[in-house]
Image 1 (cartoon, helix red, strand yellow):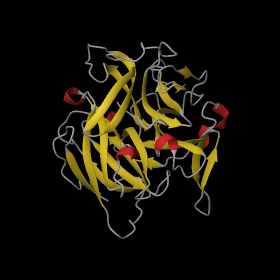
Image 2 (cartoon, one colour):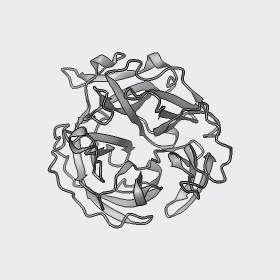
Image 3 (cartoon, helix red, strand yellow):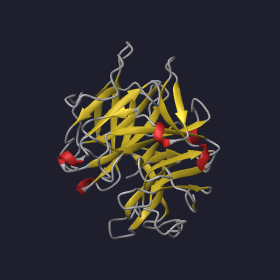
Image 4 (cartoon, rainbow, N blue to C red):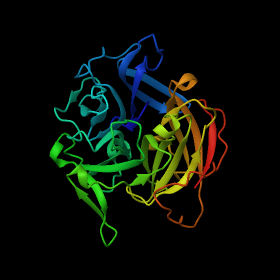
Length: 342
């Protein structure tokens, strides 16, 4: 899955699932969950398997025997935090927060789960990443997106919820707040009760794994979301995804690109854009992603935002399902490129 964050030592850190990590395969060094360190700049990368995988710095030593999978990692104050779906809750997903004080070598995990009720519940989410070790964040909160889950069908998700927590209290369950809408002045409101939550992003085609990063040069929050994952189409998620931008974590969202069967029909997901690899004008970037079949690995592609001098007109939070791709992607491989219009 390869969610990614920028550590306090200058390296990137990422989590993978069901594989051998860098230099490994699905049989060589295979672990359920692993942590990798990535140094350098594409195409010249130096990657190390920190915990799990081939030639790991330490033997797989997770703090729990059923850690499941993660699509969310962030570095704050020199500590790595990650949300894990333990994959032990059946139709009711159980999420545990894990954290590492030594850059991924050893981990602790929370005794509580989030949320603490079965339904409404949330699916694995993503942190909004900023600069190195959370530098450049606009306030003292860490923000996270989760997929809203109203029924026991894990993939029937059409909306994203937004949660925040003070950055020095991530391990404190009672400190978490969820977005409940906007007041009369357009300011966000928050609650500690999940029953008061309101979505910040909705797509009738269904939403899947997502990633988010702040572009400090364009002053926009970037959100990538897999769509087409719902019971009406058999949970296809076959290479369908979109990228969206907004001035705030809660929107309003405009559409950068919205595409079906990108490249081919193989599922692809967890599209991450590390701030470390953005150009100084914020228009050029490197995107990391994974998938199934030939994409079941670490994949990167270069991209460019074409911007205008006018402020984009805000659109509803629900993207139109007929939006067309604003650029044609090239072959997906390290060093490939694509241009996206914003």
